[in-house]
Length: 209
Image 1 (cartoon, one colour):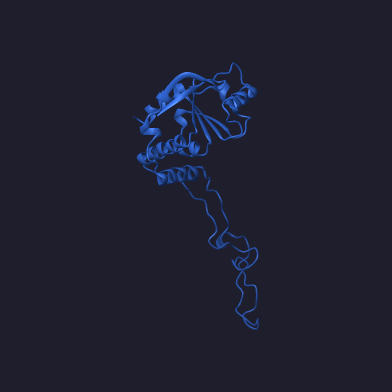
Image 2 (cartoon, rainbow, N blue to C red):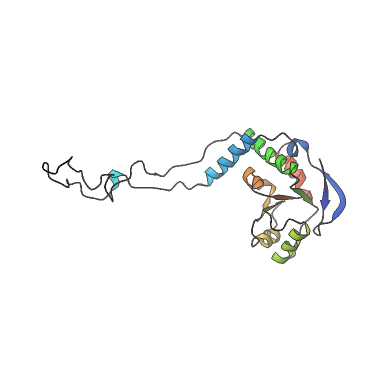
């Protein structure tokens, strides 16, 4: 598929860039997207939630009532889960939420994510973006020129640019990453994806097409 290349003023430069159909125009596999996003979110979980079970509670183990004459079953100790302040039944314990996902599934998921965004006309190609110094105002102007201000925007750079990154830091819902940092969650969590022209070839190389 062909996409017009824009400049920072939001105008067409007259150049066209061909986005590889093997990445941007496949039939999306929504289940692969689901699995990859699920793994991404699971890997971010700390898994440190913990509740004290009966054996870990610091109460005395003495019996709380007499053997007979209480009118019912003899109550156990203060650690009993049925008593206020007692242990927790089947409470959370520290665990690792991460799980394995095959590389081919992750690759398919990222291609599917790009194809979904391309089919919704949510991918723009920018010839270049550069700031002499970090300047939030200039980044805001670029977003307005591209008519994507107020949206969840993802800028994909061929390599790290500190000035661009810092210029976008204070703008809500605007994210700047490099090609090597691409993942399905970040792609799907954006309403507009701005690819730098120089990032297209590295993306193809990353997907080995």
